[in-house]
Length: 604
Image (cartoon, rainbow, N blue to C red; front, side):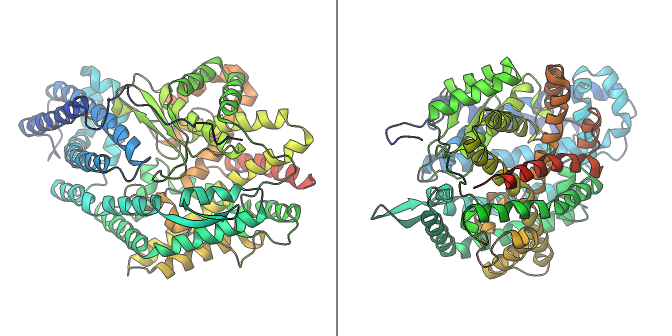
């Protein structure tokens, strides 16, 4: 367990810029402005935008496209360096006014880039019929061929250029402002909580972590305190959610999507058939997960499981880890997969890529972001010594390894749709969980399985409740704004539908809509089912690794390297996976069901 004297690391980005007010950072802001100005002039001179008809002479277009791709990559790389650097301050200290100002400056640059990108996208879409011929004579375009085909596909869903420009400009004061409102209000919330006879005003993130406490009374009081805290800020956050979803509905309709969900499917590179198969498999797993919740309640000496016991530790063995123990365990277990993965993790720890300390003003949860100029990642977590947080560290290091596997690619070819972005993180989390189970004593097996099933139930059951919630909110928001009471009512109904008799229906969580930042990004609506896709796809990939062993690792790295281009269906098919098939998803669900049965057979 982390000791009070133990200093948990803050991340180090000094190899990117010396500080928020450094001359180096200021110089790159200036360079970004110059690149934008040059690109705008280039596009104007070359007539970059939607064409009335394809070019008659592809040979004349090739050099222009190559030049434009080089310029776009250069600017995108610079922005994807400035953005994570500034967000490293915003996400760890929402009180930092300099960081907030820098973020605002960056948003203005991002709007300008988006306008440039819209014209670039429209122009590439107009070249669709000539693209093969162009790629034969243009080396940079040939290197980007799959990415260009994706851009052609995406260009189908765009408003006229002047309306896309307007949407980009309004994002700053519209959906983007709503995201910042939710982030700032929730990260700065403090609530009174009594511990050891003294009342403290604690950050809400600290109180939420008490859901992992071994003391039932602490968990219950933390839940009650948390709900009261959320209730105190619900009106402004409800306002924010209405704004974000209203904007998303309007823009998806204007861009020619069938709805916001259709826009999400296109962004995630999957189709409705794939989503339907995934959701059906998830729904059919609910009885098994309810058995898990009921077994957990019994192990805790209760007839029904209240919400505050969802994350309760079970069993007499309490698994706690210091930060040094976490480093040693993760590196050792990654080494059983490959020396390269172990060395990568050791380097990340040694160079302080991770910000681990929970503190006032720091956002909750965890994430990983890539810094383009140095081709490194930075990871945020809120480490409390639990096995859950050890798993989170391994999970986020998986995201970082995913980025590492794309090293050297142009920025326009990097990344992954959200559906595939969890592949490496689930692989790394599974490596650590399986290793912990293999090494566990009988007393330790229960808490390890508990942690695994807590996370799995959140990704399958709770994520489905969030999908139901967002679907209903979108439906109602089309005709009117919703009140905070409406959001609470929809959330509770979604939880009843998914958790069913697995939980005590009198003690659910009405404010899950308020605390989850995923709902507040105008560009990432339905940021829920991709987590389930990622977990089950990752388990499917791990099953291939178990069958093939070390021979699979080069193919695995190739898979990760290619996620920035093409449709998820085609990429998966290259590894013998049919994501439109219920059989694939049911196979991964079967792994979870086996773990549930093993858990239920254990004594508490």
